[in-house]
Amino acid sequence: MTILVCGGAGYIGSHTVKELIGNYEVVVLDNLSTGYPFLLDDNVTFVNGDLGDEEVLDFVFTTYKIDAVFHFAANSLVGESVEKPLMYYGNNVSSTLTLLKKMVEHGVGKFIFSSTAATYGIPNKEIITEETATNPINPYGRSKLMVEHILADVAHAHNLQYVVLRYFNAAGAHETGVIGESHDPESHLIPIILQHLLGQRDQISVFGTDYNTADGTCVRDYIHVTDLANAHVLAYEGLNSGKVSNEVYNLGNGAGYSVKEVIEACEHVSGKSAVVKYVDRRPGDPAVLVASSEKIYKALSWKPKFQLVEIIESAWRWHSKQ
Ligand code: UDP
Image (cartoon, rainbow, N blue to C red):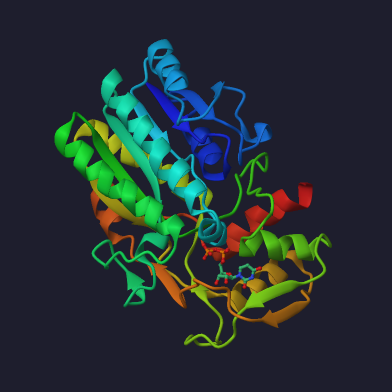
């Protein structure tokens, strides 16, 4: 079986490749716009190209016998999406349409799609199930939800089956320490705290202390990138065996931690103290985002293995080596 991993040189894509290697042949398609060559596994066939490029897709689908597509290639920063909506709708929606069109043309019928908790916007309840209303509040969340709708329509009309995975806050690094989270510029909480604790940043800014939460800072559900990666493999196997088809699943730990709690956990893991500055809220941040992942547990027995401290420990090992 050969899997095409679009965005396999990115953070979550590269960790998923690690879980596939050994059991599947892997072809990675990545334009390296936000991915890195050092995240590419030696055992993959790498095609440097854009998934909006029909010629590249024709090349991939005619050269390799692709059984399924895992699609991670996307822009994924909320703030950037507000400033550059055309880029987000172009890369996240339009390019995905091209990919789907080429899959249908070449008869490739299995698709695993990276979606996001940002599709829920500011949810009306604290624990989010897949039934919670989707009201994205930024172009990033909207672009992902648009693709979810497109997938339902395409699956209805063509020979395509899909699973949508809505990630909560991906974090952590691979157990081997050879790959981990790397963004430029970095905007995610855990890498920023760890970079500060390693002396690479002067301080940490906490965005908002007046949220309606126990300590006033935002609460998020952090999920290890390897747990996310495993969910993709299970979802694909579930599609193949006919267990699941055309479903949407949340992927989170089901436990919420505030920004202050995450900083304390990072201090504990590193044995170092952080310099913290409290600043205004970051626009577009919901107070609390915590997943119920019951649905994928029931369907595919997926259960996260790593809790917050283990997530931070793995990230600390990776960041300490950079
Ligand atoms: N956050 C923060 N300071 C930072 C980066 C993030 O206080 O330098 C907060 C952010 O406001 C949010 C939480 O940490 O409440 C997680 O943010 P991140 O960007 O990691 O993920 P998001 O929840 O936006 O997907």
